[in-house]
Length: 327
Image 1 (spheres, one colour):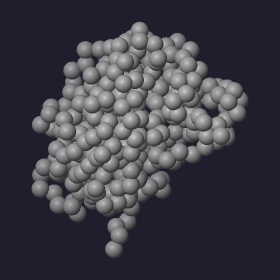
Image 2 (cartoon, helix red, strand yellow):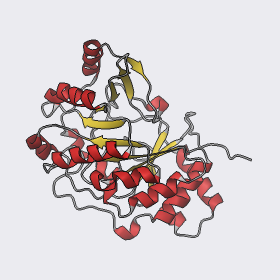
Image 3 (spheres, rainbow, N blue to C red):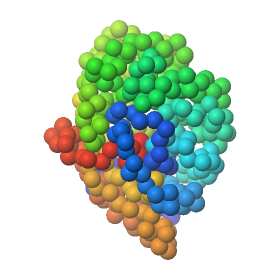
Image 4 (cartoon, one colour):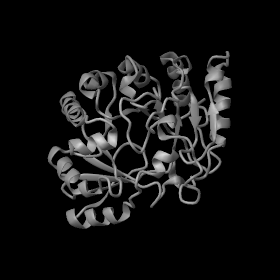
């Protein structure tokens, strides 16, 4: 008999999990990780590949269909394509994807594709080297562009470009990024900053609703749907030449349809980016719990999932940084 799926107390089915395979990153993006941050998780606390395979396999039996590998920067985790292949083989998993800053992508794109990763999101907040250096902490534009070329050659399509849009920082580049993605067939995704920790609150929030209206009119875009199961709302050209997505947790939140949870590198499940509810699975995985115990814990955890975030009402509430939660 097929087990009952993971459904929270608000009737939302949890079919998507974002897995942070490392909290390390080779960049220091201004909206994500504070300067001088050293509060990393101890490596012995990281879940092993076998532990990830077990936990995600149980979740897949309970209806989890989509798994996204994130970080930190996930490609800093040694032998990550091996883990991706293990996850892709799990019964019930239909989609394995990856979010990356792109700095290591040229080295790993082919192996990731061969492992079964089919969708790729690459962070690109500017097309200007000096601005990349200011936003990301290093001028890595050349590395990211090289990684994008390697991803295209490996067979990834479409490739999604994630841009955190910030007022007074890179909002004057939106048209340039549109042109860049239009020329190369990439999907542009514009993302509002979230008030996670001081870094997020200082990042320069930009309401994307006026941008959405302008681009819709400028390019004659219509509402569209893309595979992925995430929170982006898409517009596309009628001829299919260009697609742009908007992730708007503040100006138009998507909590009512939230189908996802996050697992940090140490096995802590965060039930909402904007709340503190969490559940720690590492003690169970390393303490002799059987699969029935894990299933019971998963149901208990999902029962704690909040109805919505409070980014608007209580922007100062969270002191946890994005890099600590997982992308």
